[in-house]
Length: 337
Image: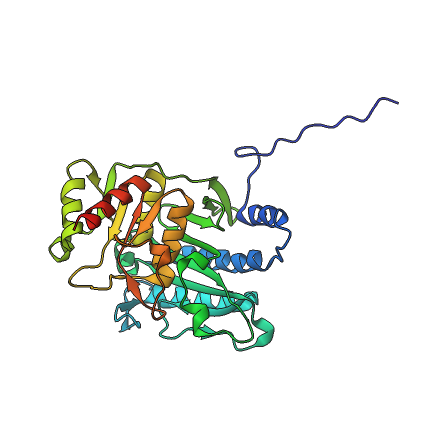
């Protein structure tokens, strides 16, 4: 009898589609202490992103554009899609049974999962629909999230929420634009997954994203220039002499471009917003984590963004992030003053 022969099965991009769930399971298998809880939590976030993506595409057809007539805890006008997205993510995360506390931009207080049988060990901070002021004009918007571990799921405390960004376990964002892209990191690099609407799955399309040391684009709202402090003004004056300006006004879109092409994004604290404009727990920390995992840097100008400790769940900060050498050049202007 002839010996049994085996064919080599090729696994890789273009010949074998790697879904996000499959990729997470493969990562879990390399981690002996993994329980699968984080994978299940991410399945809930995936569902929320797919649902929101479908509603964003339908918004103009099913009366989801426009304002609700109310405002959120930040004092911002609330769009109809804001509330829908918030409800979708909240319900999906609770149903996963793996979340303990939820912190949303749309809710004034943190939400503790009351049922002990549905309470897990993770805190999820999220902005359900970032850039929602751009919804009605069709500009790309997105969902931003960060995941922390709670010390004791039976007794979560304020200390579990108000902690520095170095303790983040996972972070990501989902961009809803000409295509739907999820960018994700568990602390071992950054990967990108594109939603294939035909099969309803996120497929890996951008493995191991790395920022170049320097870019050629700066992204900042120069309409606020007159409110900037002197180091920020001097840096902007210098960088505009050598880089091209690109600014969408939707953080997810601007960060996505920066992550893929390099350069620097800035939304600094200024005389109008002395503590900054971006929320630390669900905007600054997740984006800073992703940028650092991709080899870049995130800074307030004087301090690493992940070293901040917020004073309350909706606390704000200024931020500069992007290619490492670009951010270090910005920091040099603060050291000179």
